[in-house]
Structures are given as structure tokens and as C-alpha cells.
Length: 163
Image 1 (tube, rainbow, N blue to C red):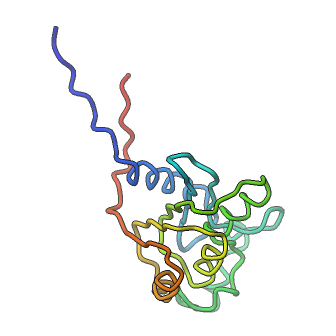
Image 2 (image 1 turned 90 degrees about the vertical axis):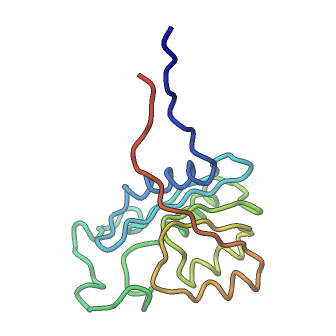
């Protein structure tokens, strides 16, 4: 009998980062599609993507306010319709009564300083990303509060399955 070559199983960081990239496909932002997955003990707790508040019109409908005002990435976060992916993942935890203390967040982009502060107060202990965002100010805060930050190579987007 001929032996089949099985696809290589992804390691845990690659697996959860691929899931974050899939979550990012729901984004309604015209600049960056960002996805986040909060995990503890290899179990998914919540997910989030960047987009307008529930029940409001998003950038797909109204256009990008930041582009109209020529605001570069990493500046003036308050001038945006979107709630960031990390914020939405934290909000989902709160809405559903899920404790995210001591969890890891896998996010397609490194965090802005506002998200970094929220992650610190939520008790996140590790942040894994595959893309650097334009604002590196989170690094000092993460060092101060003890959140471990690491980057992984952006995983291949194909899905390996046996038919």
C-alpha cells in the first residue's frame, strides 16, 4: 500500500495566527483588516475584528474619515469609526462573562497604545503578532507591565485538508 504524505500540522502560534487572519476578513476598515483571537490553555476564548460599532454605518458604506482628513496610521485614533480588533475581543469577553486574565492574544497587527493599555488592565500576559503597526509606543508599556510581546512570520494562508 502506498504511504500518503500528510500535511505538516501547524504549531500553536501559527494555528492561532491563521485564525486571527481569518477573523480579520470580517473587518469593515478600508485601511487595515485586523483580527484578534484571545486564547488560554490552547482554547479560544473570544475573537474580534476592527469595524464600526454594532448598528452603525461603517466605512464600507460611508468611506474612511481618516483618509478624507489625511490622518496617517498610528495618529489620532479617536478620529475613526472603527473599534479596534483587540478592543472588540475584550468587549466580547465582557459581554459573555469570559475571564481573559492570564491569556494570550494573537493579533494580525501590533497594538496601538490605547489597546495596549486595555490589554494590560484586562490581564493579558502575552501578545503575538505578524505585522508591525505604525505606532511602536506599546513596547515600553508592555515591558513595564510584563506583557510578553513576540512576532511570528505571517503564516501561509492556504488550508491543508485531507479529502
